[in-house]
Length: 301
Length: 336
Image (cartoon, rainbow over all chains, first blue to last red):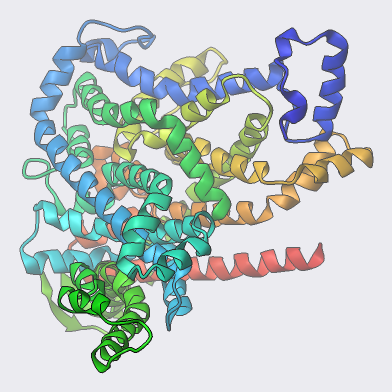
């Protein structure tokens, strides 16, 4: 796909550039972007980033400044004050610890269970394999609201209201995770490798440990990050079983912050910024891998 | 899982005796050992798949499948939030009760309109964006990561910012609009503006994600399809219409299904968009979605049974939409 286009555009002589462009036009997916394309991209990038940047701007002002026109376009000096107050008022410290525990446990467990189950579905033969896989795919499409009420009854029965385990346990199951790992392992794990290990007398568990896990590592990393993001941002269920002053996750704390009756907007923005920063940081570092993971999952799904 | 490991490992006691025997004449003990290993091997082959899927399925049944079915059962009962484990048979009363409730139909209409306002522009923009991202770009990864930044932002944080941006008196958007001669729009209290505002939050969060999914599918289209289209004299636009879109049909269908499901459960955005009105979705329920209505019935009015009936009705509506979707896509496939 890219072989005709290996010379850097800047150094190529004019004539051959035109030649290459016509070739590229034929190749469809490898068209060079013109200024209009860049302009559109930049507009969309600004649209993507603006609300985030403006969160920081509003968080660095005070409530009076936010009740004036025109709205502020540059940073003021109140950022740390606002974040500090929001931190204390919204119980954010506890919320961060809680959310890290929930998202971490959820990501690790889902990745582990999905990998071994995905391997079984992708590479092992057993009775009922297809019907069970169909069941998994079928429930991927079911909205979570449908199971919220019985889960709430369960939590009430177990006296788990406002306890972290009420949020952790339901988040350990991901039909998507199993599907994702199955699709990956179908392609990434050659049957010969498993057969060779079998011939050497490896048990199923050794096959998983020494062959499946190493082969699945990239997909496991991606799934882990996706699950972490999802569980960090999960709103409905934590909102139903946790309280802001008891044992909140970050999202529950933020929702509570917005509900104050005479809200200090700059404080709310301070909290919103604090709640968003950790994930933005993760994206800044692993953005490339996450993008790759989503795109990979898309093609196979 | 540790027990599987033990079963499969060769037993140490037998292993010591084996090498002393000449291989040509297997003794009785050796034969028994082999038979036992072979049985063990068979057992491992036969049962380990179940071992691998059972931890997932145990959790799946407890927290995925059981609640799903139990919601239907609960919807046939009167259950109050104050005593969630005290259920009284009510037959179809919960269903007739919500079907008689004008707020249910209001919420259903709002869910539909918000779903359309948020999904259609979102997927259309995502398609255009993916097309551009599919060009040869400098710093292409950079743009992709930026497009995904809203996806990393939580519903709560995003909604809180947009509440400010959509403020009637001091919001950025009204301020910008007054330069093009538009008067102050009451984004929270007027029906259509509020629905557009709520949809904007959804569009903002999900456009980049869908663009990446389309982009991935575009990159999987074989280039010779474009080459032959170009040989037939198709320009870029016709290539997009006649090659890209048909090739993307399964992906488009996938994103439509996912977006429809997402739209049917919109909850956090309208809840936070007018936080002081809480679950009513605005002063006049003007942007109350089915998700919010369910929450209002279950957790504000404390009728869990009725909330279950709403949940199950939503599910049935989704199934109908899914079937219609499937039929349409089959028709399309058959006709082309």
